[in-house]
Image: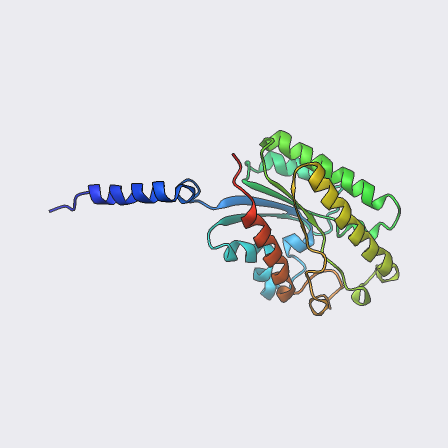
Length: 224
């Protein structure tokens, strides 16, 4: 004799009406991250690639987030054409993250910060034109560096550090002006995790980045 389905239906309806958010948002939210090598994770040794922060976020979200890695090594904020191509290739996500600025800090001129802000703002406008005005966008300020471990840019270590801090402040203002979410990674990575080249965190150094990003992404309200 088959078990009547009514009790199962009744149970489901109870869950739906008691926890509507669970019913409507049972699937993970797709999150695209347009970033540089720190997002891509290509600077990590092969045996540590699984520790890239974007992978850690997906795992530690326990099914709440599906992370799409659009990182590329060496990418500056001026990569607007690459951003445009990405928008054309990727379906609309639930959240868009723009995590750039580390490579811009090599430009120690007075134009570094205003150019980066202009570039990120152009990406924000493009994304909203492509995906809709209600798309949640997260602007990420770049992480700290370790000056004594820098390679080719060691001679401008102090200036790079200053630019990273200035970029963080400017990106925060940009996010507020454009009604975007904001998170800063500056200060998240311990110096012990930046011994390789002063810029790219080790596998363990990706965890504090993941912690900040996960907290921010899970706090974003669902778009209406």
